[in-house]
Structure formats: structure tokens, C-alpha cells
Image (cartoon, rainbow, N blue to C red; front, side, top):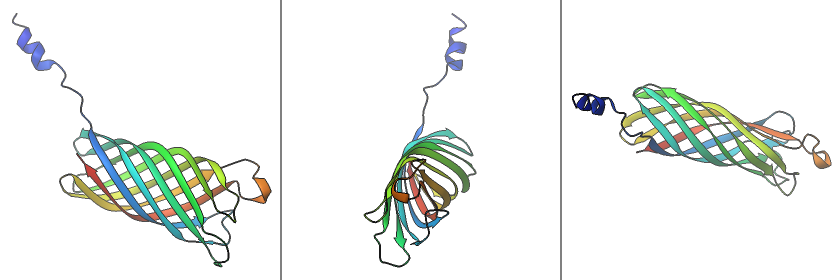
Length: 175
């Protein structure tokens, strides 16, 4: 009977993770093979996930859905439109300012009426810097490398992958 208060004191508490909803608005800059004749475009990503409440550390798992456009340099072709659905993680540290690294993998498609679509594995790898002065709200900047890897042998002479860089602003609600 005397051990009961001690056991209750040492019993684990219920697990808890914060919910996170975020959005990123980006400049999209294509590079590499298959992107000649393409100019910059825009991107928008939406994120949802869970974050462990560890002081001064950010450990999150998240799902991301994003769209990106790449405009033709000569304005004679249609813009490329791509979308991605991915899952991954975000790691960071800090309190007022929080540097972060993130990586995601999933499925994506990039194409247009003038470009053979590439469908397959979508990846991103990047970093961010958030400002955390307000409760429940984070805002900051981000930059990332993105890729959609399609068929090994691309049909009709099109590229088998698209690579692009993104940079822009982001905001997240955390509760």
C-alpha cells in the first residue's frame, strides 16, 4: 500500500503531439537536363502533421501536397504544371528563431500539352528558418531541391526527370 503513491507518481503520462498546418509560397527555378527552354515559375505547398513537444527541439512528421509551374522561356509552349503528394520529416532546434531541415518522398507528375508528362517518385530536401515569437504561429523562409523521377526510358524523347529549386516564404499554425 505504501508503494502506490510512488507508482502513481512514476506512471507515464498520456502521449501528446502538437498538430501543425502549414503553407509555403515559392519561386520555382528549373535546372538540369530536360529543362532547357523553361523559365522560373511559382509553387504552393500545403503541409499537415504532428510535432513532438520537446523543448528547444522540433521533430515532426508531415504530409505535403504541392503544385509547381515552370514557364516556357520563349512563351510559345504551355507552362509545365506539376503536383506532388509526399510524406516525410522535419527536424530543427531553437526557440525564437528555429533553423530546420526537411525531407519528403512520394508520388509526383509534371507535364503539359506540349511536354510528355513525367510520373513517378517525387523527392524534396531543404531547409527553413522560422520566427516563433507568437504562440500558435510560425513564419519564415525556406529553400529546397525538388525532383520528380519518372520512367527510366522516357517516351517520345521527353525527359525522364525534372529538377527544380524553390525558395520563398512559409507559415505554420501549431496547436
